[in-house]
Length: 490
Image (cartoon, rainbow, N blue to C red; front, side, top):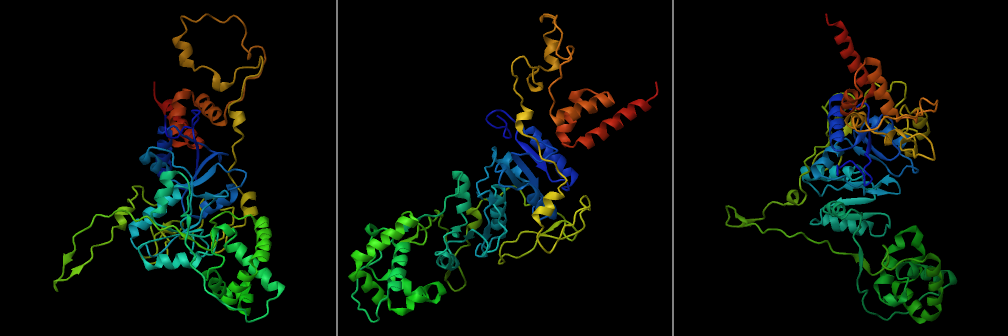
């Protein structure tokens, strides 16, 4: 089965950003057609919008056509088509959360420029956004063999919607076909130590204490409620305004208060847990830590001797662990207005390209701000593309004695081959009886109109349209051909 066909044999639909260079569009269209796909002149309801990352037109297309009610409409770089061809499969869009690309930050601890570029390309081809900052990203990718990685894990371990992962995590997710974050595993909280109360406890103190324990150790059978670290961690949080109340007592006093009143406080903790219903091992719970990274097996290299008869370590093999991606990141010529230019160095946060703003040649009627984000309402109001109709109109079903749908009719060649054997029809056709023929798909109708207007076969027009994907370009070509034929002398 061709790559760009679904399980029902229907072609996967693509829409191409209009200001991508024509030679690139023609090449992409040819590849899509060869792999069984279909390029549409309108934005498909379910399909792929091929864009050039980092351009103002890409931002406009996303604002206009990225909506929650169209979860099967994906925005990918135009190199996605070539990547699917290389892999021999339709790459799944897995890095998507609640209908939006998962924002990722590639940390500077991954210093290999080629590895960073390959990582970014893989993320984009699988639906993610690798251009986010560390503060706005949902996932931070770093080198687990550096001290920076452990620092990042410790910094963000209290944030439930932020994850620090190894650079190999992207490859694992793509191979498994799903986003699976590094799980939390239980670590023994430790033993006990006696303490004593020094300040009178209030009802608010006990309520705060119960909420803290309910958040960190919601289920008593897990253990650790009488350990030291739970209450030491509470006092370490005192610098946070939300936990300013923790300074009223020492960690020993908090622990002793719970220990002496555990029967009464456990009942209150159970009520809080019943309301929030947290799962075992949720991020942020006490005693659960990140599962250690699985270190890839490395081939030990012989250390080379230096001039002092000492040894120096061999180079890092991060470039070998992340296979270089054969598809280049879309980059245009530098220094020209309206194109992409490479910026940044190996130690900067990943920012593979920057858009140099210039006046868009096609969409001059729209005001495209360069310094501030576009307004969604304005962008959708000024959208120049049209959305395709429901697929039900494309594949109508015959009901009762209604005419046969266009897609179910035999091709003319089949009638010619079976002509001598087939019995002649004696009854009048629906068209002769005055019945209306079923509506053709807009693309098929356009191809037929061009063929009829310039007196070429439908197959000739269809073949060229499949290559270029542009109806107006197809019409101009066959007009020139007809003019050239007319101008020939007898």
